Length: 191
Image 1 (cartoon, rainbow, N blue to C red):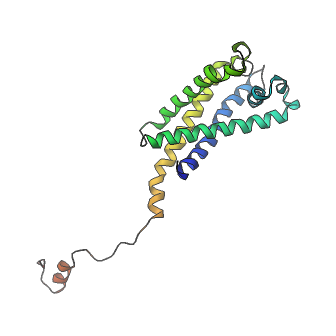
Image 2 (cartoon, helix red, strand yellow; image 1 turned 30 degrees about the vertical axis):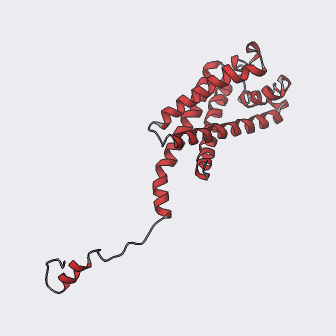
Image 3 (cartoon, rainbow, N blue to C red; image 1 turned 180 degrees about the vertical axis):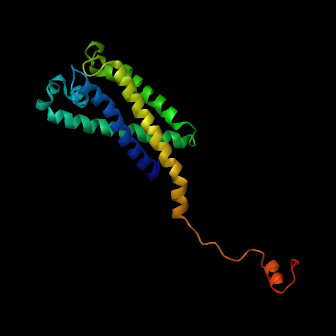
């Protein structure tokens, strides 16, 4: 894995993490039964236990730790996506592939990894924080943003590489025999 893959992955992951958090937090803010802080608090509560979930004013630490965990996870999955895209030689449709990647991540997380620690009836993804449709939209936003940022950075890459490796081009043409003959008044190429 190259340094560029890591840098692009970190940038894409940070942007995607913010996009996903925005979906979850806007839903929480707009809902009368939830708060904007339920999603980050729920991330830490999954790890530390449900006693870390409740009124946001009483759980500032779990909120901060949840945001940190969420952003690290988003960066990790973005680095994996960028490495996959570069391994596939930059296939077209990175945004669509990213959306599918985000939906696939959610399905894998919801139906494989999360039930390992908690039974289905107690999972926070069943409505404690947000209804399932919000989780799907948030993960599609995550993947789409990773794909879009990847596309934008990779599209700019050739211009950045060209600028870094600019070379001087000689002013004289390569075939000096033609030029010498022209200066002498003879326009025929010297062979």
